[in-house]
Structure formats: structure tokens, C-alpha cells
Image (cartoon, rainbow, N blue to C red; front, side, top):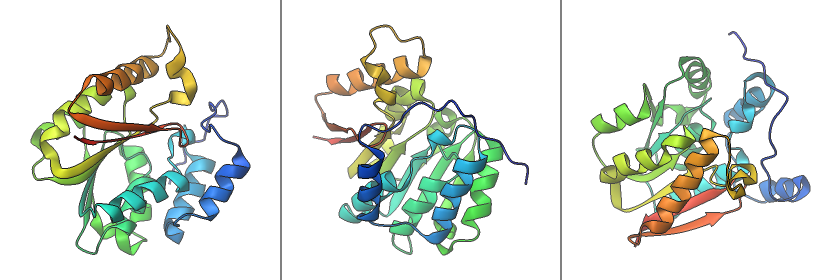
Length: 224
């Protein structure tokens, strides 16, 4: 397998100390050994490994999956498949994760690890632009995880609302963008897109939202 070497100029992604984060991970639900291997591989070998959500966020997703309880999950943004595999592990045996991405290289990495984990059989991968794929998806999802192109988050939500089950929730990742959402005039499309998304959620009186300073910001969303 050809490796994609990681960049070194990663932005800070934590709003609490590394020691507190490590302690929190140690005292939260864990992922499978294959999922742990995938995390290490991604951090050591894949470009922009800062995009990987990590074990603390995985345990939060697992908690939500168990609490709903969720049977069908939609993930918008596969990357190397860490969260898809983690969520699959928390689902019941007849559960399913449908994950969307446009990048064939990182999706190939994901599939190579999924094949080694019993929970990998619960994952369905769809390659292609997410906004196009969303128009053709059918069925309901109990949890929809937004973690792809930040400037498209508003559109992801609008196009996927018909797919969210009546008791379902959204989880949106990176909603603090390393704190850059506080800037008055950011030069990044991603940051501007996230500011637009956060303000859009605030304007929706029919949605109940909670933005948590977990890792790079995680927003939980459900219908009122």
C-alpha cells in the first residue's frame, strides 16, 4: 500500500490539556484493537491525520448509539474509516453504518482495516460527492454524523433531514475549528462555512442543539 505521509503543521485541536484528554480516554468506553491500529496507522502515515476523530469522540458516539438506541447510522465523511468502524462496533449485530466519501485512496485504507474486524461487515461505503449521494439515499437513520467538507455542512443537514428518523440525532464534528470560529473575518472557506453552519443552527427554532468543546468542537442536534 502506498502511504500518504502526514504534514507537520497541524493546528491545535484540543481545548483541554493532553493529560486530561488522556485520562478521559482511559476512563471511557474503548474501541476494538483493529480500530486502535487504524488510529495509529492514520496518525503515522496519512496526510492531515488531524482529521481523525479519535477515541474520546468515538466513545461519545458510542454512548449516543447505545442511548438512542441506534440501529442505522449515516456518516458523511469517511476519511480512513476510524469512526465508521468504531460506530459499527457499538451497533447491534443487525446494525449498519453507511459512510460517504469522495476520496478513493483513504477509503481504500479504510476498507483494508474494516476487513480485519468482525464489525466491518456492518459498514457500507459509497464513493462520490456527498451532496449528490444524499439525493439518492433511502431509508431512515437514527444518527447522522457530519464530518466532511465544512463549507457544505448546511447543505448536508438540509439534504439529509428527510433521512433522519423521528427520534434521531445529528452529531456535527469540528464545529469550533480550532477556535477560528471566533474570528470576525476568517480567510478560510472551512471556517466561514462552519460559522455559517453554527449561525444556521441557532436560527432554527425547531432544532435543539448543544455545542460541546470536545476535541475540536462537537454539536449535538435533534428536533424539538
